[in-house]
Length: 422
Image 1 (cartoon, rainbow, N blue to C red):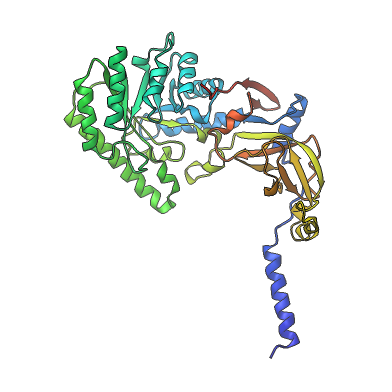
Image 2: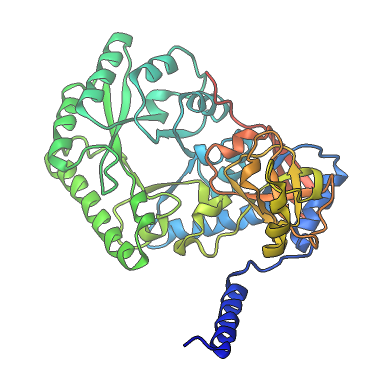
């Protein structure tokens, strides 16, 4: 029998559950850190979305990376240009880290880095169509000498044959590194026996091909639960070492040159601090630490890149178009949806960072003026800055024109970004 007491108890239980799941109201303005950034931008008359780099945080991240590279042995640091796609930013990192090495993933970036950093040495981070190599060699790069300073990445016998044909036709000598599959299964030579056939081709054509090393990326470790990641990291090291063993025992003539054994990356470089066959690792994103790199191995790294964009409009939440009557229930349930903001630009791979409680209004996704919800207690007015944190570095930094380097209370530098076009 349903009694009044049971009904009241049920209502009380339902109310308690709803109280637990109801969104917590956020109020208040920017944290002191972002309030300071906002003051700097206002003082400089910034009137559009910009990508900020906190140079003090970046410095500390670079120093952490350098210390890691020296742990358990000395490994060469190679800057992943796709994640920091600005010659000025690359120069800054290279100077503090003490490296001239870069990894490039895009032919126009390769050409730009060869011209602007003629003292550097470059490794392709992915195999490129042979047409890209042919286009590269159509131009002169001054002091940069590709036959000494550039390593093309080869992932198959078929691609090696294409590059050999290009070298023979153009009278070139190409340095080639072989991509090996150490567990990600994204391509490359799957086992040492398959790789050995490619090495025979290099041995047979010394006038056109020079072996320069291996590249084996282990990014799959990032997606594993922590209790599995350490064991897989050791397996990666063993797989990599097996390729090196075949090289040294079966092709001693190729193992005489100083070779690049590259691997790791921002998610995994710390797994290689002890007992690793790598002597070279490429890192970029960890230095900026976007959201996707909030990982167990990077707890001490600091986010150093933020998007700042002006607020163009603020209004009470009118409710979704055509169903405006939902405004009341929406805001009654979630006070964080009481107001609707529209920002300059948007649709970036980024999430609101400050003030707390601002979140994207999915119905107003836009690259022109994106909509965000906020509680009445969030004092973000028209012309104030909303700050977002990128979820990734790759691609995002190319969308804002010059990168803005901030230190303390001032803008210290403005760095043009690389051009992605032909």
